Image 1: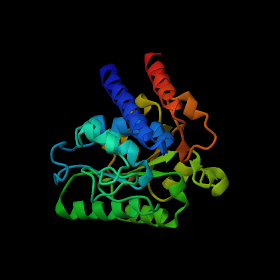
Image 2: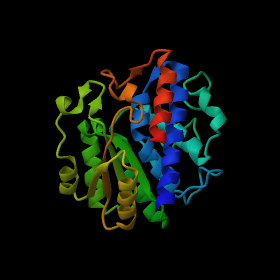
Image 3: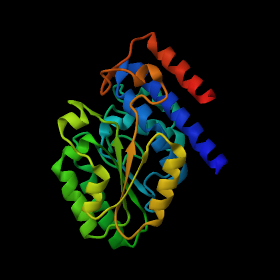
Length: 276
């Protein structure tokens, strides 16, 4: 288990490092969210998903759906870690003609299953995919990463009912709870707690963990992998800017501006955290 956790932890570190490099090219962006979900994506892509790096359209692959398209910077770093896209391509993030736009677009990027950004659509697409896979006799799983802010959307809960009604045990929703959205703290925009209890009331198997605790994430995903009686949801409490104290304490953190001299500070703090 220790070797497994160390391997994931190293992957999470590289995802964070690459995300910082990509964001520096723009001088701003959704770097706080990328740092917050790096542990989660490292577990998903290095330990849980079934895929073939050289064949992103392989029919037997597990589907990972990014509802929150502005988190694309984190997913690109994870896809590079997984070998789906070349790491040498990451510096083109957000540039004209790049396959790595600032918001995820399925038509541009290998391994990007859906175009995200307008919140509230991912889980509905996941339900349709999961039904299609069932009819095909395909055992692949559908994993949808959504945000706590996305729970404000009624379409998310309609899709949750559909998944439960059809007994889609091949669907796993992962909710990133970082307590922040574009309009301010999530709790002040629309109260969504108790999140896990609400999913259970909709007929889902629900777990909640610290989304920056890799052993806890591994244990939770292992449990969900074995559960096929109903759709499952993993609620992950994450910290914006995780691993870089300079950014963890930034007041305006949804779309973050980072001064030119601060990028190296961020890298140094990231390295210091790994050595502790």
